[in-house]
Image 1 (cartoon, rainbow, N blue to C red):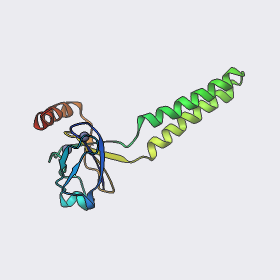
Image 2: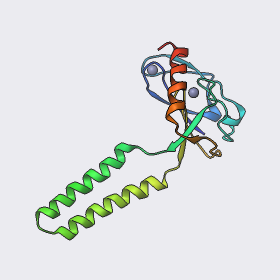
Image 3: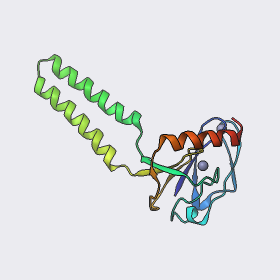
Image 4: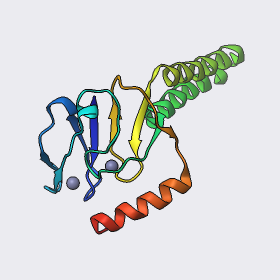
Amino acid sequence: MEITVKCAGCAAALPVRAAKAPAEISCGNCQRLIVLTITPAVAEDASVDTCPVCAGQDFYIRKDFDPKVGLAVVVVGATISAVFYGYGMDLVAYGVLAVAVFIDLAVYHRLGDVTVCYRCHTEFRGRFKRTAEAFDLHTADVLEAEYAKQVGR
Ligand SMILES: [Zn+2]
Ligand SMILES: [Zn+2]
């Protein structure tokens, strides 16, 4: 599986391959050293049992979707639509807008789920079975505060 470590110092995203992960990585942005403890389940892409970064065992699942991409599709669609609307071609304008929304939905549904660590926000992508629950705000509040204390933020 692919692991995206979030640097606790500067929040940079650091991609790591679980199967060949080194014992520690250093952040290319702020040089912070991050120790990785990869469990066999994570290395074999079987499941995410323990977070390699913070040793936490609480994860949630979210759609692997970049909201910026989705917004761009809609904005481009709306712009093209406005041009047709300006020429009095209402039906074409609505059509273009509908297509943009449809593309947005299609992209959203094609993407898989990404498992995220509640504490350090490390992300896990791979073929492993998704067992984590959906995001829970209360859990996030509690665990993020706990992790912040742990890393001294
Ligand atoms: Zn950093
Ligand atoms: Zn973690």
